[in-house]
Length: 66
Image (cartoon, rainbow, N blue to C red; front, side, top):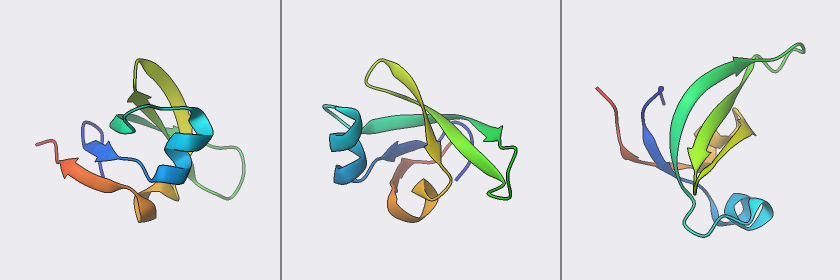
């Protein structure tokens, strides 16, 4: 996954955040102060939210950026 990719978030994530579509664009990798390396800032359903990098294992890439 890389910045600009369009992804479909897993149902549980969409439900947790109250996201009607769950279709997101990866905006940037955000550094973390701990040993978990980074998070993803994503734009989804008109909101910018921060998700853990574990999303890479559970989200479906719909359209890869070039």
